[in-house]
Length: 460
Image (cartoon, rainbow, N blue to C red; front, side, top):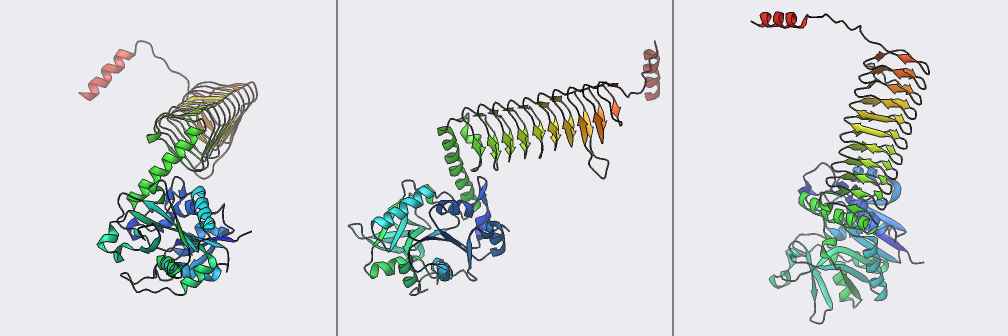
């Protein structure tokens, strides 16, 4: 089996990003630029080598031990970068070389590039694109018959060569042996004083070896990210691709332009995403759900038939038939069991709420374990924090919590217990008990007028 290795160039400073973060670690649709690039070659390669320089430790920590690293201490061009990886490259087989800031490349495109390379028995194969505006790119210089003569960088190009619209995308496949040989012959005799990887291509042509090319159907796939505007453009293009992929699998996007879905999200068929919905991280959504409008889900697991409106859900599990919102906030480590209803202006934090239970209005529930078919009346507050520690509240099956109740943890409310409205509880309530804790009501007949007159006199 042929050895296939990839070299990802990720040593550049990315000055135009104006950021403390290395350019390749900026994210697009929930994944860093370099992770997108890695995913395009990982299915095809045995080994991946990442050339790092600026922000080397940050990149190394972000990628862990999934790849090998080569260090480029000085940024002296793409050829120089690959030269730093040369000691880690095999003597034979094929080598991908690609930039760490091209997040729209796919494994399918890289596979086609490799197929062209093998079909031509080429020493090198270049991924190219026809673009409406070639400014900033190297040009593919060909003979009238189409044979490639060289790749010329824009700063070294003549006025005639600058008119060429076929560009070098900076993505290649090389024969490992040919790459090793030409890297040793590189020179920095050019306008930028750098070692160009494109000179390896020209050296191979001069030796009479075959250099092939594969032209992209959509030039936008080759977009490199050098500034925040291009980062935004790449995000939009990838978001469109992601949304279209979900629609092909039976998901409805009412307004794709305002719906943001990260690349690692999974959505079941017949689910509907309404406008201004954002789904992030590794969220998994089942079938027949309705999400939105104006909702945000992050790293959640959502069952079938779930309704979420105008709400945020983060790091939580929602089982089948759950209803959330409008205007609810479901915080991490929450589990909403089958058929739970969470209503408007409710916040749930690190709680397990049992099947069929309801928290319909204006409540805070934190660090609670709630059984099945429990009703939490409007304005119920689970008081979980004493200023130093968080404490757990347990409410058993079938309990009824009246409106405007305060449950001061640690506390247990037994099965079928009834808590009267307006109570503040500090002690456990046994199963089946009625519990109330209120100040006595004082009523003074015919005193309303005198009270109002007294208040007016004070104001005057």
